[in-house]
Structure formats: C-alpha cells, structure tokens
Length: 328
Ligand code: DAH
Picture 1 (cartoon, rainbow, N blue to C red):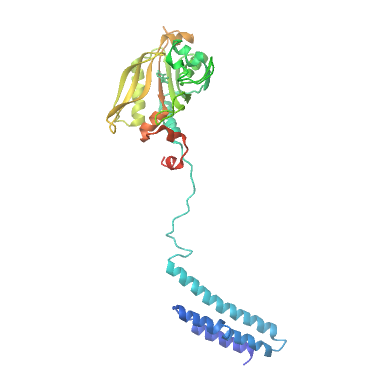
Picture 2 (cartoon, rainbow, N blue to C red):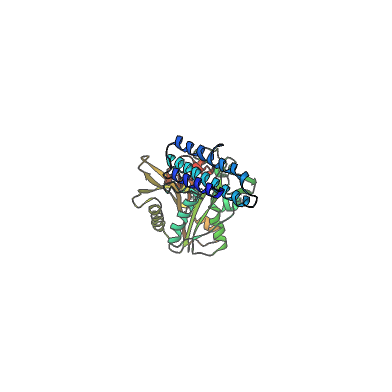
C-alpha cells in the first residue's frame, strides 16, 4: 500500500466511525485518541513519510495535512454544536430579545408647555416672549403695584440693582406687548420666572408661567370665563369640575382664581389667576380704557404639570434623573 492508499483507508475508516457521530463524551474521546492521539492513525501515517520518495513528499505532505484537518474539524464541530444544543443558545435563537437603543424623552414640563400652547393657539392666540431681566416699571409699577407692595420685598424678588429685577412673573410681557403693539391683542406668553423662596417640595427658585392677554373693544368677564373653561376641559378632561373664586391682583379688577376639583385628594386646587385688565394698567401704556377692554390670566406650568401627572415634588422636574424622566 503506498502512502496515498494508506491515507484513503484511514479516511474511510474515520467516516465509518463518525457517522453516526457518537453522542457520549467517552466515545468522542476514544475517537479523538484513535485518530489524532500521539500514537493514533494519523500520527502513524506521518511516521510513514520517511519511506516516501523525495518526489512524492510534497503531495503526500499536503494529503496528510488535509486529512488531519478534516478529522479535527468534524470532531470539533460536533463538540461545539452539542454544547450549544445543551445550553439552548446558538447563533440563530430568534426568541432572544432585540437590541434596544437609548431614546430621548420630551421633558414633562416641556410637554405641559406644548399642550398649553397648542390649546390656546387653536382658538386664535399667538405666542409672544419677553425679557427675564427687566426693570421695576415693567415688572411692578406699570402693573399697578403700589411702591410698598410686599412683592417688591427682598424676600421674593431677586434684585440685580434697585431698578432691575429677575422678573417675578410673566405679567411684565403684558406691558411690553401693549407698548409695542396696538390693540386688538390676543397673546399667550410662556416663560421662566424667578423668586427668592426657600426650596422645598412645593417651591423652587425658578419656575415657569404662561401668561394670557386679550384686549379688544367688546370684551367681558364672560369671554374670559368661556375661554378658561375651554382651556381647563381640554387640559384636564371634559368632566373636570372647576370654579371661579374672587381674588385680588393689583393689575386686574375684578380678579379671580380658578380651582379644579381633585377627586383623588378630595379638595379644590388652585390652578390660575385671572381678571379684567385694570384701567390703571391701560393708563400706564397709553391705551384708552374707554374704548379698549381686556382680560389677563397667568398660570404656573410646574403646578399644572404636577397636577396632571400626579407628581408630588417640584424638585423632580429639575434634577434630570432618568429614572423619573423615562416615565414620560
Ligand atoms: N402674575 C400672577 C402671579 O405671578 C399671576 C396672574 C394673575 C397673572 C392674574 C395675570 C392675572 O395675568 O390676570 O401670581
């Protein structure tokens, strides 16, 4: 038998031994030792190389390497697939969960702001913005705050200098709008406001408001009620119970606050302030209050957001904690 025939006979014998492939591990070890062991059939073939003529050696070397590879491959691949079969995992397990990618979220405050804007824009309001750093005139005097009003007190207001403040409400933009534009006016004004208050679960040193201003020739408190009722039902649901409660603001007369009924807490919760624009305010911006009338309202966005989503600590809205934000 020449070397070529010897190799073919080993191959035949291996194919017979490995089909079917043994399924207990002792038999697999025996198979490996029989063919690939130090004294196995393949090693025996290699030892015959010394008898091969120099001419045939390259061809015989290649055939020997091929059979060694073939046998190793067959044994190894059976071992790999039997392992993965046992653990239930292999490359094509279609029941594995897909890869997920991190996705961004609209912040609940921004969501609330967007909702409020779209409700008012649907009924013809435009959106305006104004300065967060403003003078005493726009934040206080023109809004009919008397000089000794407590809101000017250091307790509540961040003063930059005696004449300049971080606005304490978005009502300052009412004055800017009426200075810059002739009526009729129909605007909402979202924005950030600042107050020097102790930080707690219910107050933060900055927060957001949406202001509303409607000025026209024939405007009454009934128009104001209709619009705010529409807003509350769109924002909190058509079954929401609400009430107007008399109140006081220097820049509106008469003034009111709007409460909504919370079934969960069993109490009325204040959501906004409103009223008819005080003639003194019109006077400070040179609008003739015998011709023009108007109403204004203002609401805290954090408060509305917290009521809507059942959030009980305002600080959660400012901490950027993904465990909180991911819920929205
Ligand atoms: N500026 C008030 C505040 O910060 C809210 C407010 C009340 C705004 C009545 C108004 C209004 O426009 O008419 O508490």
